[in-house]
Image 1 (cartoon, helix red, strand yellow):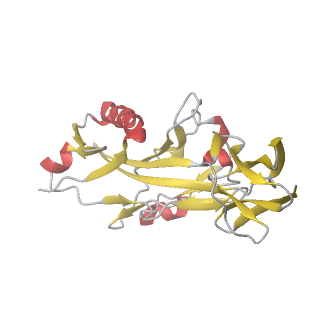
Image 2 (image 1 turned 135 degrees about the horizontal axis):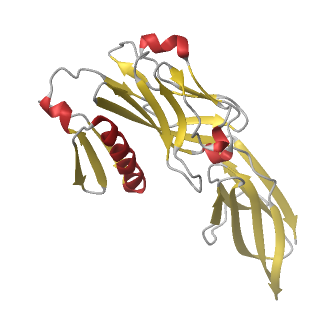
Length: 260
């Protein structure tokens, strides 16, 4: 018999153990945790003991991306397709400072979101007409930078549960870089480039007037769940020339130029 297993990065492992303990208290399931290298393997022992369990949850093969302010669907479905109308469905996430980890809850044929994370209030919905086809996907409206995190789609039917992990990245274009002269000595000056409001973390490059990339120290960054990522990169250059700081993530590009 083959056990159904998923592998989670260690940064999410502790959260997922808490989720499993929560469900196992409700369904009295036996769950075995195995450490495999740098990942945690979570095995539902009832799958090993019971051949009648023949469905699984499927999420997304690739991380989901959406532009800030747009709606997005976090995919999750039962395979092979069976009706999930009578299933218990939970969408959860690892949290920052929220008092709960619940994004959306479906119980006994209706939504029960009294204990939902406040930031998701009135922004989540299941496709109710699609539940009969095993579609447990969650629509998240007006995506925010703070929505960038991994989501857990968990279903319970009878005494057994299944889960899928769906990472979401909310893309936001940050500010035009601000270039300042920090100090000068002789014919050299130290330039500092800063930009805020990016999601996810962008690349920061210094270019000369011919748009050739220059070698410099690594960029530094700071992440804020509300305001996104701020970046900073400095360089020491010769005077009497022009320099460009370019900040980019995929097709999002901002740049500024300075003549010294």
